[in-house]
Image (cartoon, rainbow, N blue to C red; front, side, top):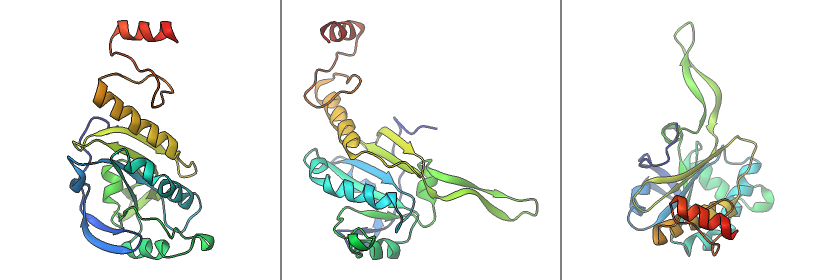
Length: 209
């Protein structure tokens, strides 16, 4: 079930910030009223596609910041695994140099509440708990506005990496709508014409394009 239009599920968890500082009681609530949040899940530390995404977000961090947004990552790894990965050189498979927060969802409850856990718990015929699927998060991404409401979500399978450029585009579209009240058509980029949210506005836009 989509979370778009709903309040982002709240959580309090351990995280690693600033590339190596372990903190407890990390929450997205600290950003409400102040920042947009690009909150994304990835499957596991020390893997293959995941570091390419995380490093790509770090390389684009200035673009998010100048738009008033923070980037926060999350996986089912522990805070100690995050810390070790953040302190491993890129050429050795690490993500050293990444500064945005990485949340530790060791209990998998954050992934469950955001609907991105790639499997589910169940009971077998002998009443033993089993897990069906992969006990990691899909590549979910959630754009949360300053009121704490999810305005965009994207969920990829474990094998498909995401586009930081698309995340920035969606952030631009949200900011444009909030500022001007205009809706953004297909393939809209910052600086392009948008539309008035009416049948007349759509007709006017189509006629001019």
